[in-house]
Image (cartoon, rainbow, N blue to C red):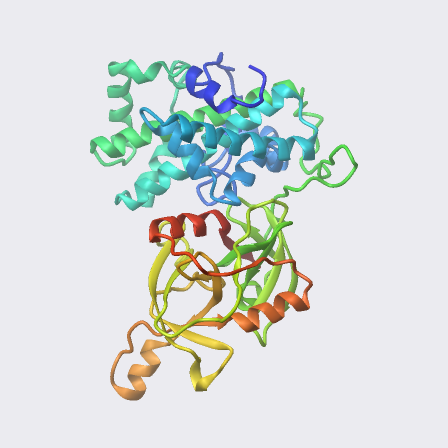
Length: 457
């Protein structure tokens, strides 16, 4: 199969049926942990495969490039939803196929991929997306993280026949095999519930498919593990420029998360200055590195730049927030506790000034939590009228007045945001708010352009 337009449709039709590459490469390809920047596959490689594991770790940016590109806009939801749907709509397949093709092309340009490697990169992107989305759904359904970890622990117990069943998709109609797997999953801690077990099988399938693609990739590129350096220089594209994707430097720890949103073509993002303060590295959820172009603590605004061409949100042209108007807040609150997907809340503008009558702030009632900082405040036309910046410290106010305030949250007013963008020569797009968009469509609009930011120190 040559990669190109229609590749996702081809994968769906064939279920990517390919011969299994036997041997130690399975275990060594499964090196990414649940907490890693790439899709979760397994916890560690066996001791005897440390050399291969080192090579895989060093090449991880290339292996997971497609997934990283998809994660920058949450496009992995579109891919995964089509893959797991029993009878996906043709329009959804076509849309997801275009998203995948664009992501592969971006990576192919950076790493000079052949058609065969493009196919393998697409496979990793698709199945990494499935692992990401299905595990998110399982957590939302009440599966605990230690139970979920059991699915990945179980990967090390799969024998060659098991992996072949997943790679060739023969397990779907093999009731005896599924029964065997269900028993093993329960033994590894998964709840004995139909939905949890069915989702676990999808995670197992996609984890094995990811590993199989990586193993084939190593074979295609004829990687000599014994001779390969464990930390090779970053790959370059045809023009000689350094490729976009990169792993985070070693010994940095994820210390905080926040929200950002695309404001102009070229990968420009806006967030709060306090979200990136003290960060030695800022990345998107998939691990793609972002450049901090400017941060202004006095305004609490920061401008970042990524490598993707995501459709930016538009700013409202004209007046800023209006008293009592409806707003939608998008962001990633309480990273690691709530869903790792985007979270939206709705409310109204309740005051046109912040604490101490600060005219650079406004107040709204839509609930926000830590992690929402930097997210967009949208009006009912889908245009940005401010940036989430803070919430009132309810416990401090209770100590002072003996009562807990409700839904007192603050945003950076539109004039301050516009001045910041103009001062940085950002080509943002103002638009008149003369239409009303349904909340469901507003949420979808926000989801496409709002991203999770990760701060490493």
